[in-house]
Image (cartoon, rainbow, N blue to C red; front, side):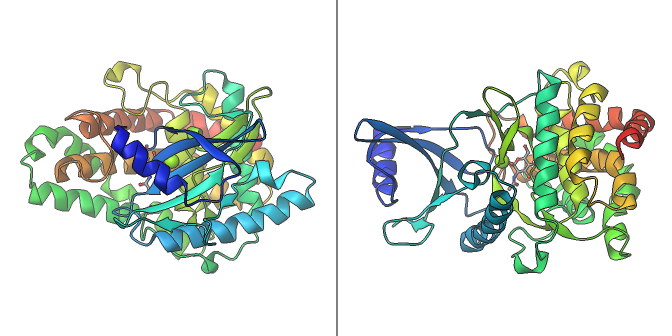
Length: 369
Ligand code: GN1
Ligand code: MG
């Protein structure tokens, strides 16, 4: 961050009702969409930490609706956590209001900011080197799902319409390939063919929802391992974060999304495809943790489709990266020219491995359902 940008951010941070005087402000985390900063303050010799975020309003075109969804969901969670004897200020997100009152600030340039209390003594991981960490993330997302099971999904805005509509994601990919505005489609013939051969499975979860076999729920929709804060000493799940995409959705989006990111033997953007694959041990740890919390609220069809959801969410993510590559990298942050194409290739390799291991995944789910 340049000094000028730092000055600007300090001015923005000054709008929020943080406790004490700001002593530092640093870029934080590694999200692909929003910009996050860690703010430290001091009062009477005590230090406090906060997260300040700029919401990407090209992606979230109605940031007020995003904030409203999070207010409703966290206040529901707060009650549930307190009733269970937990600590709501640690186990769910707490907004820090602006000095004017609302939980957001719109800067002169039209940028949209909000701030949260930082959750102390927790850590996040990009990969589960110890499978128990993944078990604990499964428990945390399972508990999140269970605590929201009685929340009326129709109270929430659909802030990113059709976010996990895999039929539309597939159609969008084909449109981008046809328009080919960056003349990149020729580099991706193999990847486009890979998606095309799987066209028939795109509507499977949507059809289950439409026929009433699986219910619409309140879901997180971006259940990456790095979106759960784990206790730095015990490794246990403390708080599910990044609630921007909380919307009506399917439990299977959340389970599948977690497996896609966390049970991969390599990183999401690994270029050496021989390293990419589904780690069945990690799959088992997550499934065990997740079902120990969410098992009682899921119906039989939801459980039947857990392994399939991992495949479909991985395909979806690969298609989204490929679409963005074809469109000229306008959605996801990228670190180099072919980053989105590499991400797509890696996701498709993982999807292929999941297809091979579908039977093994089913046997594992059967042990814990
Ligand atoms: C984005 O910003 P981040 O990293 O939390 C994306 C997710 C993708 C993910 C892929 C709003 O999440 O849907 O699965 O990248 N978020 C949005 O890593 O599109
Ligand atoms: Mg995130």
